[in-house]
Amino acid sequence: MKPLRCFRIRKVNLLVIILTLLGLIIYSLNYHFQVSIDKSLLTSSSKDLTRLFPDHLENPSVEEILAVNATITSIEIRRCLKYFTCNSIPEPTAKKSILEYKTPLNLYSSSWFDYHIYMVYERTDDLENVLTDIQILPNGKDPITPANQPGKWISNKFNSNINIWLYYSPNTHQTRMIRDIDVLFGHNDLSDDRPYWKYQPNPILLPFTLSIPPHLSLLKFSQDDLKEVDSKFNDLKAKNIILSNHENYKIMQISDLHFGQNLGLCLDGDNSNCKSDYKTVKFMELAIKADKPDLVVITGDLIDFRRLKNFKSVILKALSPILKNRIPFVFTFGESDYNIDNDITKKRFLKFISSLPLCYNKPEPEDNSLHGLSNYNLNVYYVENNDIDINNLALNKPNAHIAILDSENKKIDSSQINYLYRLNGDFDATSKIFKLLFFHYPLPNFRPQGKFKLIGGYNMKSNLNSASNPKFKNDIINMGYHVVSVGHEHENDACLLSYLDNDDSKLIWLCYNSITGDSGQTDLNNDYQRKLRMFSMDLADNSENKRLLSWKVGESDAGAIDYQKIFSF
Image (tube, rainbow, N blue to C red; front, side):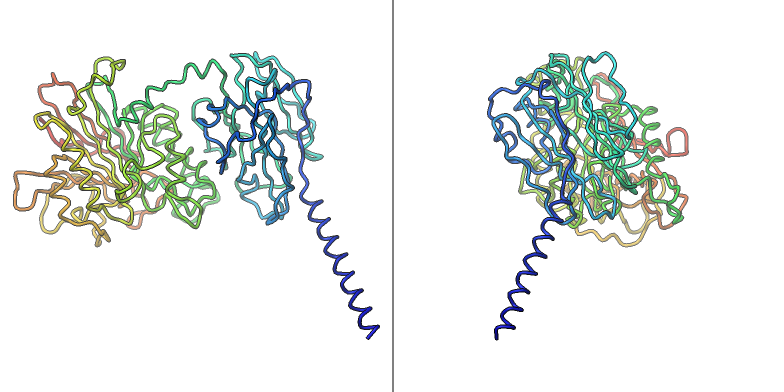
């Protein structure tokens, strides 16, 4: 028995040695590159930051940063063995809070390692010098010093080939310091057009090549910039109000863009040089420049979850023409905008898009009893002066009413119809109000039987898999809506004239937008022209013949397509 016992002891000892060595290997692999900071540049007071962002899940919102007046004072990048946790970060102290940017820089690689950015936050008031620029460059290449910005560069080697450069400037009320960092993924069609965000088109350098590279975007604003932030839009958004001094008010509807992380998806199967997303961005830019919309309504399938791993980047790319031109907009969901398996929940989507400038979406539904999450109503008031006190508006007498519904699971349900009845019950019955309704998936009535009038192309005629009650069309007509406009069916762009059942004196136009995005699929015609739909309304009360008009804009056609009158007072 003694030899056997001795063998067992040796076996146990050997196992302990192997596990110890394995632990040391994992520990050595999970090292990180710490950015060294010249402590003479940063002076912190004793304010308590241990609960700077206690509920932080991804990265803090701008509102959270403003609430504590925080700024980033340092970053570090850690390399961690995939599927293992990095070395623990220091606990928050009274002087600083350290947060991990959850999305790894190597999101699009098969490396055995993950690379994460860690950010050190401190209160702005505690600092003599603040971080104003970050540049990650090849070894031997000097950073470009910001113009008219006194300060000092501090460098630290990321590895033998890459340096991280940090620029520190004196903390004044005019100094635009780095308040937050986003990591975005894409190619040369990616941009970040949010105010105060500075997008870096050069990718973040890593020790290996990535199929889709990461980019830094830096949120930079000064104490003086805070004074210029206009809170008026948030007040209007909270009350679902749009003020316009344009006698002719224009709405642009876009739908089914199907943007992804890469440059595009081409129908011929050759995606090596496909730039269909970029083509759609240019189409939108030209249409916005020509038609100058006052509001953009996005009726679903803005992004395609099958073509992305980082939805924020794709949303910013898809919305870049809207954000760049500072146009108010509102969004409702289609089927391809979210997917639980891809960690793109509707709530995460709404939290991000609602934070974008001039977006009328809200992070949480106002009424949890409604079907879906993206149900909104916007009331347009014509005013000669936008400085009007909104408390003096006759809220029950808008010039136009725009309702947006969520057709989740391919249906509109009775809770949403009751919601519309409540909204319309608040209006003055004698007022002349244009009423428009938008959602993604068509009602069954968009596939009428027998003879009917239409304007435009009606190509897709297979059965609609809609769970909506077809009688909802009568409710919508009885509430006084003049048009319902939807997306989903890529190769239909017509408006169909539909009547109240058993009463031809009441009617409504049922309109399709058609497909706007070049990366979306078309089954009947691979050369089908991409389009978007426009609406215009005469708002001023002195107009003799107030009209609601509609037309389409094609990607390759100049001018309006199928110009038509929807309604007139």
